[in-house]
Image (tube, rainbow, N blue to C red; front, side):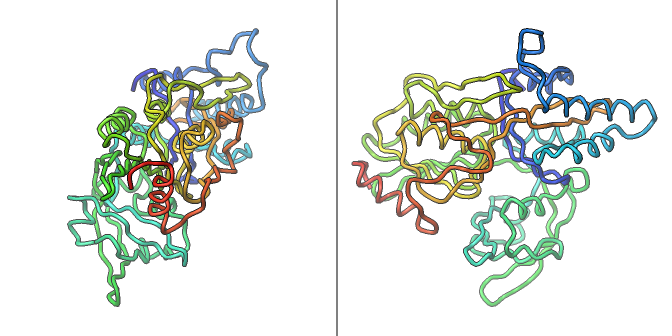
Length: 391
């Protein structure tokens, strides 16, 4: 992992399915080398930096609990989990060494699962929207449009899509590739069960398609490595003068550097976001040279999270895109990792990020300019037509 990589990725591990936003590049570099720094700030541990915060104190409490457990021959990870549960930090979490490694795999577009994408309908039912080619789900004959009724006997009706994904993928410790998961499915009047074996899969985080009127739809599933370049390439190859739909629905986040690179495809430099780490303010800027003329609509929904919200907020606040869809998830807090004696990793919230206009995303999300649900893409085409883009 590059020392310049920043990431904000919803975490779906078994312990609370925490959603984690990690910013400090020096800490990410430490995660790659196995030697995370002992300070929970980004180079501001000296006496001239910000005063220690309550978050830093919580970090010390977690580390102390883990170290004392190790000295007593007990599990540092379990001790850290107990300390985290008492911290009052809803985004805090503790991950085993293996879980953290799998998270890093996900930044390269790899994940363990069955190859399904789904959405929740207005009535609460879960519908399969896409089946990855060559995946266990595809081999079993699952199709887009099928209804997912249960996972391992648990009804999924009414559950958030993020919880359904967690059930499908399973706990990383107990459900690696090769483990079984039983799905209850429905297609028309037919209802049946199918047992699948999870597999290590890879996905294309960016897909591009052209609508009949010339509009280019760029769908970004997650901000894995290389996504920024892929988005820029898709913009450069779009038909001259035609509008673009940047579809961020269901985007669970990823590398902040890639989200900023994607923003750079549509901005000529300038502010993308600000964030604070333990009292110190930081900024993220786009690179110059992006396409600032082509009509642009960003599609979002309740599954648009973290880095995807950061990008959406930048395009909306900078007046670069019309945002269409429904309110985004609202994950805008900053966590930092600390390596524990047994190799596990603890993370606690140390700050929050804001959009260029100063909007705080955490717990609030981003409100679209135009509300739309099932017909969001059609609405986007209408907007582009009004903006002068081909449709």
